[in-house]
Image 1 (cartoon, rainbow, N blue to C red):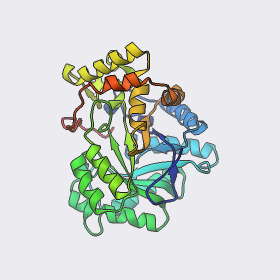
Image 2: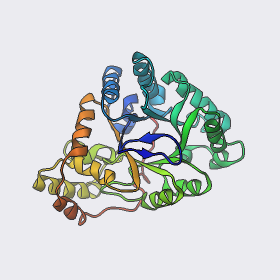
Image 3: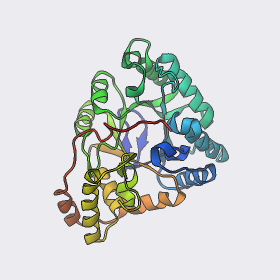
Image 4: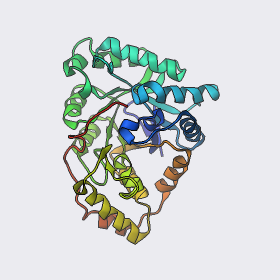
Length: 319
């Protein structure tokens, strides 16, 4: 099954692999990813049936795109029909996010990836810019993003951010083709639900990222006692433990349940799953097709979830 991104010609499947971890971001994930492991993972992604990969200029301060670009060059170019998405980012040192920075960010991305254009280009994390006005004003980042589409440097433009209260006005005011929300629509949190409703109303395709809450909903509390990229206390982990117990009773992988929770929502065009090991590619496909009894979904309705921003207290670091 494929879904068209907005009103564009870009079509995507229900799964997308996320490239943040491929850039080696220990401050975010708590572990390192060396180049050899990242390259093997990228090769596994291109060899899989999932023809959709998302990255960003800022991931690993450029390492994610550089590693993806190395594999693209190995293959002699981006395979026909493969959808690669990246994001234009603010100047990390100054926070500047004006039109010139958007164009500079894309040129750096194209150089790293070895491409002349990208199928999907998204404005990334405007809430971390030095000024949101600089992003939205005439001659600002958003106006430049749409110019890049007019110039044929991308086929679809999107918004990829965290804070829902920042995203909602932008989705209302600008004709985006897509948006990415992360960590805010998953088994334990539904913060992005109003944003998703607005997107559907506006004809904006929803790409839902990070359905595992940074990893714990795939690996379990014992193996990975973190929640949305932070050390987690018992309050944050208690709903995860409840979900673990339900999955144990019905002998289904918790990761499959967390993934399919996103995939089964009709508002979600594609679910973005970060991977940083080659074997995770095959595992994702297994989880996506795993048969989950209806009793599991019924039991999960009793597990409490939050509508609050799960990253409100996060100590954000771009690496």
